Length: 175
Picture 1 (tube, rainbow, N blue to C red):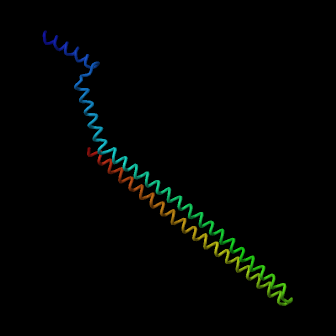
Picture 2 (picture 1 turned 120 degrees about the vertical axis):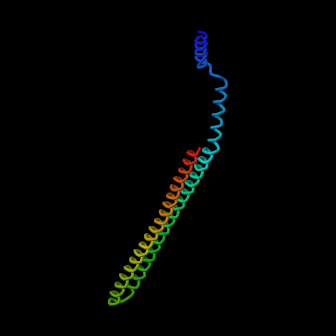
Picture 3 (picture 1 turned 30 degrees about the horizontal axis):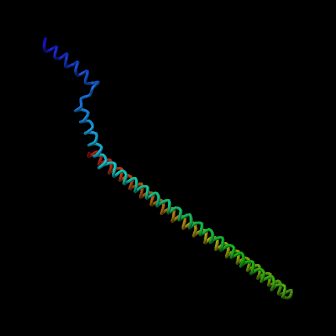
């Protein structure tokens, strides 16, 4: 009977422990928590933060490269416009010269002058078209090169990110 009374008092005291936790258990829980926090800080949080900072830097560089590419495209467009205007001025000068020569010549020379003026205008227009096509081709090629460069950088970043993610997961599994 004494044993049952002791078991009953032990059960009653363990019921009281639920409401008032043992100091040793609280201390051990906190020690375990801080040890786990230290291990996570040492092996998980630092590599994750380093990878995040590297990724942020890579994205910032990619954005800067994109801005540079936009500026280059704008410069090419301005150059194209300047060349077109210059070609128009040259064509206009050629046409004016041809008209002055046509007025000074006789009737039979006037026909030849008109033909020459038309040929010059046609050549100037073909030159303008050729120059425009060359500029467009150059612009397309440079745009494609910039796009390929940006895509390769993005692909490299994605591959590196996957490798980093696998390495972090492997390290966590080893813990």
